[in-house]
Length: 583
Image 1 (cartoon, rainbow, N blue to C red):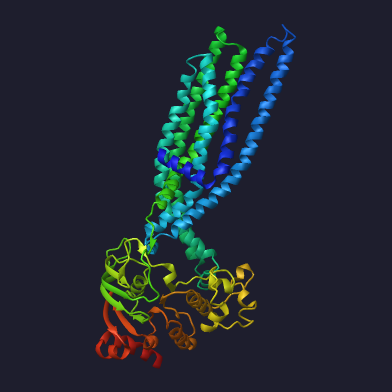
Image 2: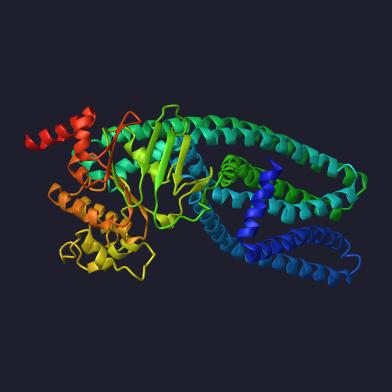
C-alpha cells in the first residue's frame, strides 16, 4: 500500500474533523497502552495464587491484583465506548466535508469534461472513494495508536521470557504482509474493470424502476428486455469479482495456515520452557494469554482491517486523482455590460475524438445582437453556441470578448452569462425556488418574470401559487413539459446577464404558444447579446444575424431575405419547413 496514499488519507480526515479526530485517536491510544496491562496482571495473579497455600497473606495481594485487573478492564471499556461514539460522529462529519469538497471541485472543472466517458468514470469512482479515504486513515491510525503499542509491549514481554519467542512472530507477520501487497494490486485492477460495468447496471436498474421511464417501459413491454440486460451485466460483474475473490481467498487460506503453524510452534516452545523450569506457570499463563490476544489482534488487524482496505485502494487513489484535475478560473479581466464577440479560425473536437465538431469557424457578433444559429442535426450549431457562450474552449483558434481573449483555464464570469439548455433542470422544489434558485434579486420579482414568459398561476396547475411544490413524489404536483420549459426560460431571464444562450428553447412548448413566446424573447433580449440555437425556421426573422451551419462549418451569415437569395442550403431548410406546415 503506497505510503503517500496513507499520508494523504490521514491528512484529509484530520482537516475534515480536527477536534473530533484528536478525541477519537486519543481514546484509542490510551486503550492500546492499557490493553497490555491485563496480561502482566494475569501473570502476577497466577504466580501469587500458586503460593497462596504457603502464605495466607498472599490472599490480600491476590484481591488487589483482581481489583486492579477489574479497574483496567473497565477503563478499557470506557475508552472504547467513548472512542466508538466519537468515531461515529466523526464518520458523519468526514463524509459530509469530503463530499462537499468533491462537489466544490466538480463546480470548478471544465464543462467539456462532462462529454468525456473516462472523466465520468473517474468522477464516479472518486465519490465511491470518499468513505474509503476515511476507512484507510482509521485503519492506519488504529494500527499505529491502538495495535502497535500493544504489540510492542507484548513483544517485550515475550522477549523477557525467552529471546527466541519474538522471532517466532515472523511466521505470523511476514506471509500476511506479502499477501496483502498482492491483493492491493489485484483489487485496484478489479476496480478499474468494474466501474463501467457498475454504471451499466445502475442505468438498466433506473430504466426498470425510475418514475421517469416506467410508463414507456410498461406500455412498450420493455421490462423483460431491460431485465435481461441487467441480469447479463450483473453476471459479468460477478464473474470478474469472483475470479479475483477466489484467488484472494486461496492466498488468505495459505497465509492463515502458516500463521497458525507459528502460533502452535510458540505454544510447543513454551511447554518445553515450563518442563525445563525456565519459566513459571504464571509466566506460561501470562504468555499464553498474551499470545492468544496477539494472534487475535493480528488476525483482526491484517485480515479484517488491512485486508478490507486493500480491496479499495483503487477507489481511494481515484479520489485523490480526481482532486488533482485542473480547475477553471473566472476571467481575470473585467467585462463591461456590453459584450461583442469575435471568433477567429476556431476548431473544436470533443474529448477522445479526432472528429472536428467545428472546423475553422470565424464569426463576429456585435453588442446586443440577436444571433440565430440554424442547421440540420449534427451540423455543429449547439457546439458553436456553447463555444460562443464560453462554456467550451476551442481546440484551435481564438475567441475574443470585447477584444480580450480568455486564458487557457479561464471562463466567462458566471454573472455575465445565462442559458436555457435542451436538457434543462426540473428541480423538485417550489415554483418560486425553481426560478431564483437561492439568488433572490432585489430589483426583480418572480411574479413579474413569470408573466413575461406567459406562465399563468391558475389554481388548477399551481394550487399554492408560487409556493406550489413541483414534485408529486414529495406531495406536490406534476406539470407538463411545456410548463417546465417555460420555467427554465423564466429562470434564465430572472438572472441578470449580458449574454444569454438559448438552445432549442421552445422544443416542447405548444406550437400555438411558440410564436407568442418568440415575440416575448424579442423583448426580453433587447438589452442583451443573445445566441439562439433552433431548428424552427419560423423564428429566424427576429434575428439581427443568422448563422447557417453544415458539417461543422459556417456556410453563410446574414439576414433572412439575403440568405434566401444567395444560400441554396438555407433556402432548402426554409422551404422544407414551409412545405411541412402547408401539407
